[in-house]
Amino acid sequence: MNIYKTVPVFATALLLSACGSDGGDGATAAGGSTAKVSFSVSDAPVDSLWDVTIAFDQLELKHENGQSYFIDVDTDSDGNDYQQLNLLDYQGTDSKLIITSQELPVGTYKELIIHTKPGNMNWVDGGDGHYDLKIPSNKLRLGGFEVDAEAVQSFTIEFDLRKSLVLRGNESNNNGFNLKPHGVTIIDNQAAASLWGKVDVNLFSMGECLAESGNYVYLYEGHGHTDSMLSDNMDPNDEYFDSARPLPDNAVMPYASASVDVDGSYAFGYLPGGNYTVAFTCNAEDDDPVNYDENIIIENPQGQRKEITLDPMKETELNFVESDSLL
Image (cartoon, rainbow, N blue to C red; front, side, top):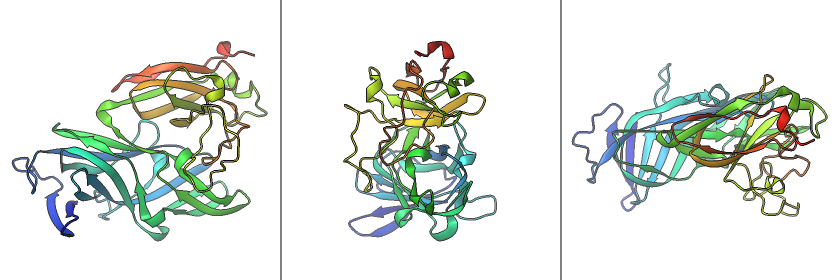
């Protein structure tokens, strides 16, 4: 595995270090301190799919000093210079290491870009067939992050597939799927929290639900939200977002959502610490990741909404019980 630093002014490439290097005196070619950094991937599942495979090739890291660093992913067990992973194998707090202890300059990185292998290296399997997964330009452009002077720093790239995976066409005319950066976040593991718990299975058929399906827990940043403010997943920046649809007043979009298993268990892994509102709904099976769905009621049944504070580096348990419902 190699890192390459690009200097925009001269458009040249320089080998910075190799995987397993001790980094010498901790100085980069341009001077300054460095830290060893690792990256993993994890995901939250998506409805009715059992395989979302992505072939990870490189990470491109754009430093605030204007330089870009390209890091090859670790070779796989067969010696391939890429990691082809089914994201659904790494849910909740499970993750897969794709870059190990690579030395980087400390400082602020404005952008992380995931480079993937092109063509049929990426796909989706579901109940109705096998489909291509399109990643525009074979890149996912994500936000920024900080590398500090710690000896080792680990990050997890968390995929919320209910936000980032978008069907092309419709259910009766499925043209495959697009993967976009909306809903993909970078979490510093030393500041990460996790949330898990149980939903009383009696809630699956209560409220305004016609069947025991569509059971999800939605997570919103902050406290003090009213029932009418909580929306389902949507992406106002998507080209197919329908701005003519009425939205809730002061709508608050979810940070993430998690499916509830048949035994009532749910889990969120790799969350930033802080204040959150957590709500259960029993009718969110058809949550469109692009447009607001006014037929999805959050919370459902009423009373299944709680405020919580998540502490970094801690697991928190939160359960939903039938006695809390306001019916």
